[in-house]
Length: 273
Ligand code: NAP
Image (cartoon, rainbow, N blue to C red; front, top):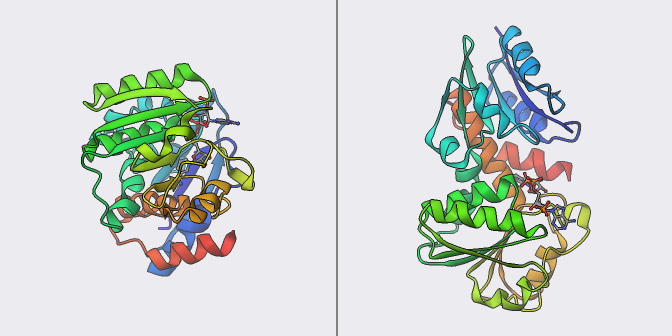
């Protein structure tokens, strides 16, 4: 019988996940399909009941349900528990097990480049859901200190407390001034939505140097304004699409037990930009 998978969220029309997973199912010859299912905020319980009714095999969870979905799980893996959010769920006869592939998805491009995070000082710009998974990732990698810069300082403060709970020294700085001290950090990560559609810089780039590692998790366009300016400085670049593929590959492997086809995903994704 054909197995059905989904991504739930709102908005969901522009999600790249159906293209990514359907291409991978076809490439691996698996009898599976993947659909986008819009569930508005406040309607998660009904939405999940509907998915159970159709015997959904598994699903991804995106904005605004990643945190709320936790209470509907029967079981959660360690990464979910640490972050307090899930992005991947497996359904076994109505028993829902949650995973969080954002943490390892974020770390994967760093690992591929064999970059050592141990003892590093890190600047994360942004303090939303993705930034939380990134903090958990850097904590796993035993960085020295995480500095947060965010438009709303209270959210930065909150995320810095989370980093401390995970045993990493952390503080927060004014986002307007964060660029002034950019050369202090080994990693500069953009975890805001600034740069989407090629518009805007999250921080000033004047002090990014050739020794900086600039990781922009925004994946549309591939070359965000931050990445373009960091390239001018000869910084090491890590692209948002790399994280997108890595987290999708991990979801695919959790669901199917089959190795995800990297090249098929990459071609599907980059062909669509
Ligand atoms: P979120 O929870 O809504 O957080 C959004 C963050 O962006 C907050 O820190 C927010 O600051 C900040 N922000 C939004 N508009 C801003 C503006 N105009 N100026 C300055 N800061 C602004 O979203 P999220 O899930 O963390 O996702 C953040 C971005 O990462 C999105 O673009 C998403 O597509 C991308 N993402 C990529 C991947 C990947 O695999 N590559 C994975 C997850 C997310 P406030 O706290 O002040 O509101």
